Amino acid sequence: LLLPTPQSMEEVTTVLAVARTYADRTSAPSGWNPNVPIYGFVTPNPLPHQLRGGQLAALQLQQAQEERERKRKAVREEQQQEEKKKKKQKKTDEIGRKPRASDKVADGDVTMEDATEAATTVDPKRRELDVMHEREDKVGEEDKEPQTEEEAALRERQRQAQREREA
Image (tube, rainbow, N blue to C red; front, side, top):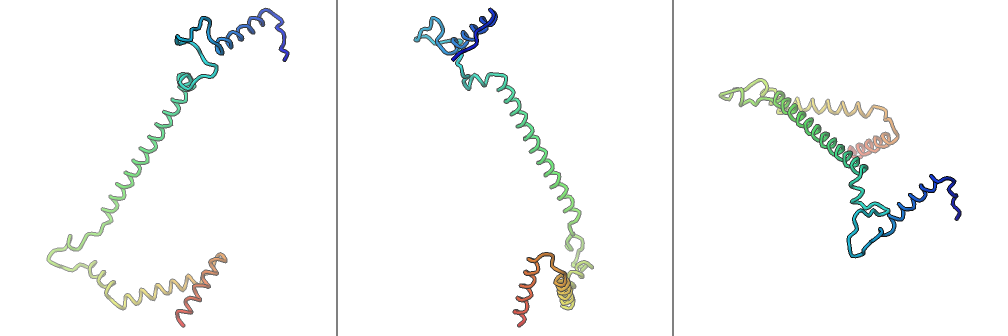
């Protein structure tokens, strides 16, 4: 292994400074006593607790705190929007709520709304007409051209099942 030879005295001092730095970091300091704790000695690889005290760690900590705050703010905003939606829904439910017959009519009087409800639910002719209209709607849907092969196969199976039920 051949290294370039320093050409000036400045290069010599630089090489010696680097060598001393490496020697200080990789070997025991001068006058070292193994029974006494070492102060100021730095390992070649910084330990985790040494890294945590550096500028990079401070930057990472700051970014983590900012990210945490952004997430908390987003959660708070989401909760506020949900509360607004619930309040709005509650208002529309209160406005759209049908008042009961007992709330607005006294002494057992029958109102027009009660009469129409009774007529639609009890009148057999009305029920028959509703059933007929539903059947007409279904017939109209069956006449439509299926858009995919799967829909066509499904419709054909439905028609076969209908024919089997009728037979």
